[in-house]
Image (cartoon, rainbow, N blue to C red):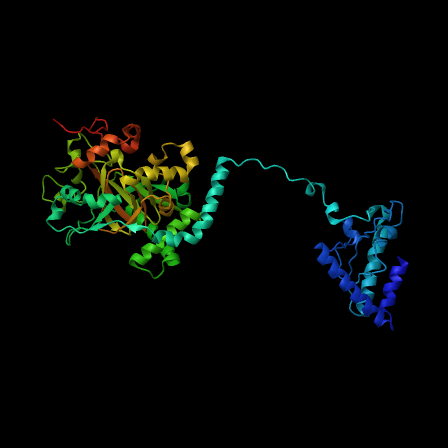
Length: 519
């Protein structure tokens, strides 16, 4: 050790500049070759081996002697032998510039050696000369990798969804643009007089899309008659969990005015963030992309409240037996009248059925959704948009119903394993882009206030709202519905009839099973 110190001190003395530069050059070449050969530096201060003393000094680096013929130091040897013997005297490793730096390096080396001596030789354990860094790792780091246990179904589903999400982030804009629009019809005043006949007339064309939109003639716009103080209870939806079949919990109670105020505030915040300055179709497209971004990627949590399947009144004017009502109260397109019009088989149904012959109201806010489903007994449905923001629909024609059901089972197999009747629970939505990729026909329809949307028998449909709005829906059944009604899953309807959601009106004790025709 003394000779090593004397050598370094001599290199830093006056009149020894040539030798010092020679040493520095050799050290640089030696260190560079060692890094290139091994990928890392074997040098390490002695104090670091035992975890004792100060941290590694950048000006001084030591390495363990790799001479395999030299016996290891024993525990009884001095601390200078345990630590200082690892210095290679033939090739000093002092990256020093100038005599002052060399002197500082020597002082540091001597101080660190003395600290080991003061602590005691037994605190600096002997080191094998041939030791490598990998040999000095903790025992748990040297263990062979263990076999991984198989993933649970939940973990496997999460992994699959994460992989899909990584692709969805880059594809979502083009995916929504790839969806074709459903047809839009503009009836004349004479055609608009009879809803059942007109819908039967457009059925050959419109049924191929599953849904269609009907825009009434100019001048047909009934007043919105729902009392804004009407109170209702919402259902809470977590938008980022709509792919997971999560049920909707009960929400708060609002009046229509209170709900509108809450919904408008949230709507304004999101529009500033995602569709600022956009109007019309451009805004609708931006909000559509944002909705599916939240649903697909789950990178953002969002909970909304939806007033769905409400039996709290109607937005249409009602007939009053003792006084003359407005002209819209007796209109055949008034949903209070349409289910039992001449030409609809529901007129032969005794009693009233909530949501079938008696309209349901839907009071929505931004990103509230209705998940994929068909109508009860594969009936036709008609939805009228009273007031508020756009409602986007996605329709799947009956010709693609079987393909859709297969695709859903492939998209969320774990959910179907636990809930075979998942599609009847109305709690799961899948991005249309995923269905299109599986060769399922999906068509889009954007419904604005004052417009009707028709869904055809056995047509799956889903959608979401772009902000506060209020819509109303009911069923009807022209004669061409009969083949669909004959194959509808009535067992499922009977099960749901036992629940409150499809209870019979209190004035009727009839069961929900349509007679084909009264005698």
